[in-house]
Image 1 (cartoon, one colour):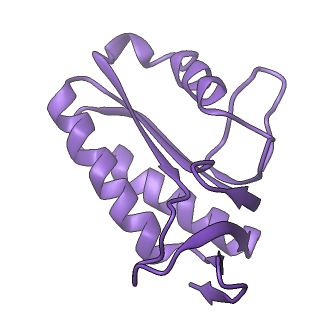
Image 2: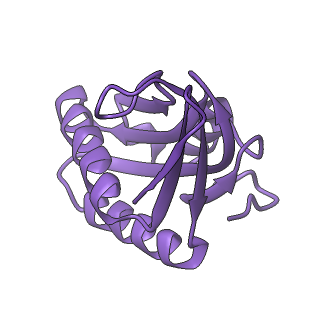
Length: 149
């Protein structure tokens, strides 16, 4: 994805280090509609120390089919913007090599009221986890690894 001259950040897949949460929030606050918002909610997904099965993870690689993932992310955002009280939503998924506790994904929701924002941020996370063409490779402490879609 890209960041254009007016600092508007688009939802999508970015390389690790290309963007951070602060810049995403700044971009949301520059929306002409932000004056309608009463809250901005954020979710940050990070690398945890164990797999779903409890196997110790030492790091992770994230890869994506950018074009397909970006279509899915934008579709999710457009659908969720139709929810009552939602002013803006950004979903940013990073790709690259990650160590434990490093950021993998950001979801930012601007809403008229907090209740709508909390509801939509949870829906957004559930939706991108099911719909994105993103793969993760967990590298385990025993030297093995596993790709997961």
